[in-house]
Image 1 (spheres, rainbow, N blue to C red):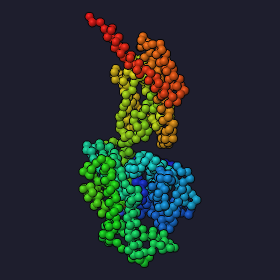
Image 2: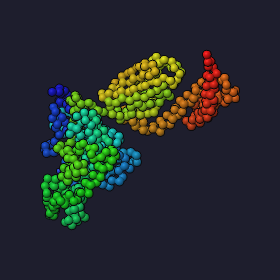
Image 3: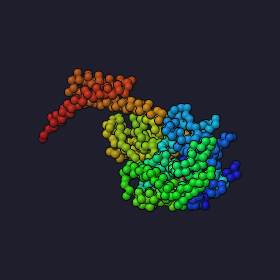
Image 4: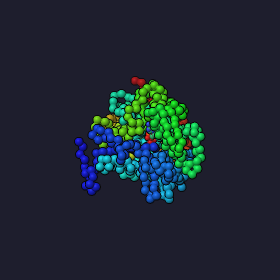
Amino acid sequence: MAKIPINIKEGKVKSDSIIVGIDLGTTNSLVAYINDKETIVVKDEDGSSALLPSIIHFGPDDRPIVGKLAKEKLITSPERTIYSVKRLMGKALEDIQSFQTNYGYTIIDDDPEGLVKIKVGDRYFNPVQLSAEILKALKERVESQLDAIVTKAVITVPAYFNDAQRQATRDAGKLAGLDVLRIVNEPTAASLAYGLDTDTTVNKTIAVYDLGGGTFDISILTIEGGIFEVLSTHGNTFLGGDDFDQAIVDFWIDKYKIKDSITLNGKSLKQKLRIEAEQAKITLSNKGFFDTKINGQALSIDKKEFETLIQPLIAQTLHSATRALKDAQLTIEDIDHIVMVGGSTRIPLVKQSVGTFFNKIPYDEINPDEVVAIGAAIQANILAGNETNILLLDVTPLSLGIETVGGLMDVIIPRNSKIPIRAGRKYTTSVDGQKNLKISVYQGERDLVEHNRKLGEFVLNNIPPMPAGLPKIEIHFILNADGILQVKAKELRSNIEQMIEIKSQYGISEEDMAKMLIESIQHAQDDMDTKALVEAQNEADYIVLASQKFIDQNKSWLTPDVLKEIKKLTQKVKISKMSGTKDQIRASIDALNAYTGPLAHQAMDQSIQQALSGKKIE
Ligand code: ADP
Ligand code: MG
């Protein structure tokens, strides 16, 4: 049993040992955790369902209500009821222009590149704040069940989420009072729930088919030695169970000649029809027939009719599957397992169609609307250290590299690399007879090390004296699964070696990390320009040295005119290096090269002649 510390101030058990897993969904969200090897999917107060509708309603007092009660308000108060907020995460207004009209609430944006906001009454909320409300509701739910404070979580996101969307999700967690230890891809979580990672001796290829309420995606993953990699992902962010409901609504309107133009509460009637349609759909997953009455009108639909309606929509998902396979350069035969995710995969025709397409029986034993949260809980449990025989896998949040001539950052391990990882590169000296080489290790995305974060430095001593450029110095970065970085330097001609270990990899706050990333994007153009300039300056230094060497070695046969010209051109390089632009420096280098190039050939001939004439045959 793990020890459970008590927070004296709050009088509650502070359950640091429990890290929860959260599926923050477009339609439904849920939280799960593992306690003593048992997976618990946390149910709502009346114990009926684990699904918390991802809907936020702002009542007259502006207090947010989340979940089932908010869902009911969709009918009566659509302008104050926010749904599908996940679609807005990390998005600017221009990203969502095409579907803005789908919402019953107002989305605004006063700054065209800024992130969208939602207007409720006279208040504004951004998607991060709204998602935080959903997360808070889940946090409260699990805390009241555990009677403990929960502060740490793993949250899942779709595989196609970009950095901005992932960061927005992290921020929402933080705002809800959760330390988000990891953002995990939904298909990865689902595969974890099925334990597909446990046998590390075999490599597997998995297709995860996720059909939720409003979105569909299919991801092709590989697992090699416990390491997940998303090979491809495809889908339609506007295809899901909602469309099935809509198809039934349209079917009824057509079949019973219902006037959807019924005024007064026309909107409400449509919404009522939608609710009945969802009920019909869910019923038809188990039964052959559904009927009900609404406003005195009898409504019915049978399974065959329903299947005819959704057939074309299912065909679309399989089309995405074909594309995903193609992108991954795989065929159906390469897929070892299919994992079904999302409430809509409960529909028998969906299961059947996917099975037929892949010619394999899909995994569907775990509740498809809980499987992602369960996987997140498993990941959380691993992070909590309760699973000691599983290797922790992570990615480096920032690039790691060393300083090269002119203060440039040379990246050795790029950001987002999976760890553990090792990577290396060869360098050489820039000065003749150089005995020591200082290796400074930095973390960050900027092109100049001065803008990045220094992690440490060490000196490779006792390099045997050699002309500049001759030593071969290999620098190796080894980043282990715990985030500890070892840097090794070795001169390959003499075999001398040095190394340091840097532990502070993660001694950087999330805010600083986000700041560093944002800065790197903001300064990208400047940085690129500076880098090009520094590179030209470095080359200028090199060519000045080389031409000096050339003069020294060849002055015996070079004419005074030629010598004068070389010196003049070299001087120009020196001057442009001091004050010129990148292009001016490049031009002066080119001019010097153009002049000395043919001379270098002559020099070669000269030295061959000298060598021959100097050789005495005994
Ligand atoms: P999301 O990942 O988008 O948050 P979910 O995985 O929770 O969504 O799926 C929600 C969708 O699943 C809804 O459209 C819901 O109607 C549908 N659904 C849930 N149960 C069933 C069922 N038994 N048969 C058919 N559809 C179902
Ligand atoms: Mg989902």
